[in-house]
Image 1 (cartoon, one colour):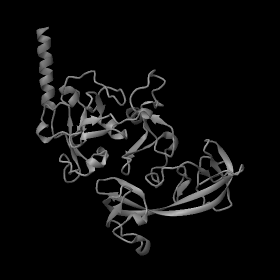
Image 2 (cartoon, rainbow, N blue to C red):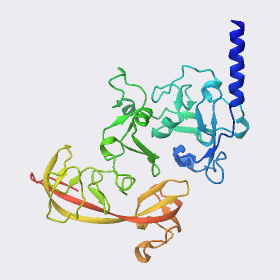
Image 3 (cartoon, helix red, strand yellow):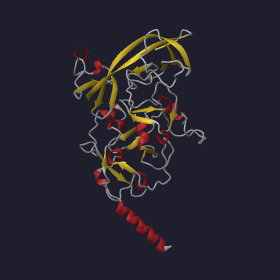
Image 4 (cartoon, one colour):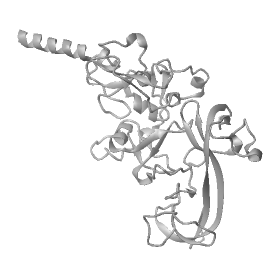
Length: 355
């Protein structure tokens, strides 16, 4: 037994020697804004000290469980980075710790204010959860999660798990009821990407997954049950989906749609019916990249307050602008271009209409 223990100790020492702190630097995919929950945090949100000037962050692995994280994403102060760095769970030898938001063990866990554990990724994605200490990603507050969210069932694991547990997120598409744990969704390949404040994360379930090369308005101004399709769209976005040719349900809106045209549209009851286009309107949206790295594809021209776009037209590409957000505050951004969204009002055979 003694020689076995010595062998294990030697192996452990070798493992520690192999842990290199500068494993490389890469750019985190999650903007800093996604870690900030509420206005009290926005009032004082200094630049992340763990991010380099070029936006990259050090990758570091735990010496015990080997979980690999960005120093900025996990909130690792520079004085803690060393060859034997341990993640929060391994520091406390909490081998049975599981995320209270998804119930999975392992991964990039941090302690919550009520002495439970939560994945950093889950804390970012669940809307009501916030980091009390934003720079160090600690003191995760899960006390604001409403009962309605806690009652949601994950479409991926509900048949394997008898009791409802954790907190599910939902598809951001209109009123889609699809709900899932963050880690279940990630493992299944559900699209999750940074969104416009205050939504933080935009989630697209498989049913509503669209061509990633198509610009569609899905954020602050268009999360509703409207029928929207961009000029380059191969699919109509939002509550009602228009199919341009009878019998061709795999191709949506590849042709120009005009008033009086008969189309096949998805009704609120999720079934498809023949209907007539009663009105067509269009809206120009601006695409801007905010200083925090988040992106908006559906900013109204009048929201650009540093320029009278309604009179002078759009700014030059790359021009720095000031954008007025629904919270009444101004945010710095760069103008990247524009897109035109078409909105359709249709009437079904029973006289009901959707717009």
